[in-house]
Image (cartoon, rainbow, N blue to C red; front, side, top):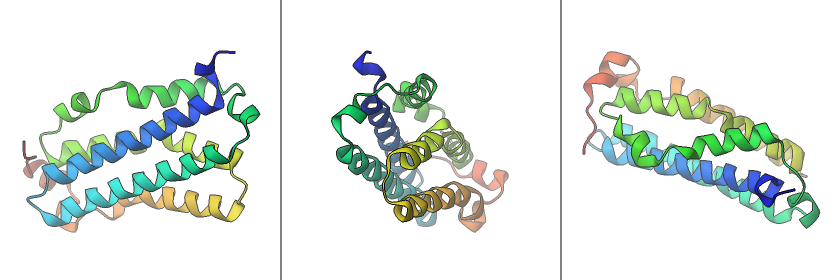
Length: 166
């Protein structure tokens, strides 16, 4: 088996995807700093992505070598690889308004990466309570895009009116 198909590589792709999301949300925070509420919203997301990557890093460190070197599910590997395939600059190139950022965030949060995160936790974590906490945090993270967005920007017209800074 190729090392490029191992559980370790699946973890590394998933960790890279969390870092990618952190950079994306951090850039949203910078681009929409004209409204501190919007900037804070995106910066909170960026901080949570750091937490997600740390969970995965700690979990990977605890795995025995034979588990790390075991073959990973090909479809999960491809899904994780897909998330990080588009260069960040290219993903950000289409973000001209808050609506663009909002839609890109929905796309990312709806991608397979959250499924992979949950799979890795449920398959390899040894603390059910910590796993449940991480799952709850992940669900809250996804739901907050719809329920926790700054109130004055809950509608698409208002989001389209807020332009991104260069």
